[in-house]
Length: 147
Image 1 (cartoon, rainbow, N blue to C red):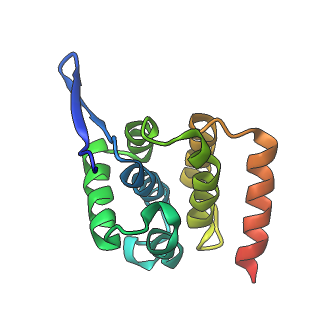
Image 2: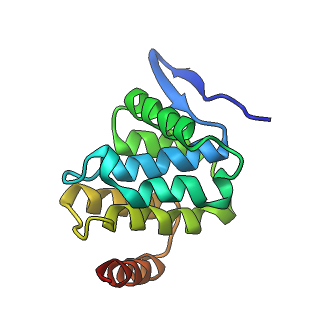
Image 3: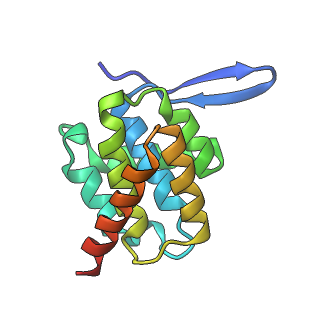
């Protein structure tokens, strides 16, 4: 059963909390997409292909997931804020594959911008990905995207 995102309040500041894992994964991918200073929203084929094809999103409406992730981004206000809001819904076994897809989305245009590098580091830390694993993934996906 799909659970909606919840808004909790910490003091007087409302905090977005995403509880559905598929929505949380889409939100983190959206955070990575929005971290790019080069590519516009509709131009990243890797992002759209990931939302349409990965097992975690099977049976879900891709357009609705993307729209929901976009709304969550607006509510969170930044890529890091969106990652924080989504993190609690991501199971341990989902974290590494999601991280790989996030790198793929960021590398789709062949350039790692300073903001994307910052989000890469932030995501690596938040998802508890080891440095060596993260950098090996980056190298493999850089090579893949050169073809």
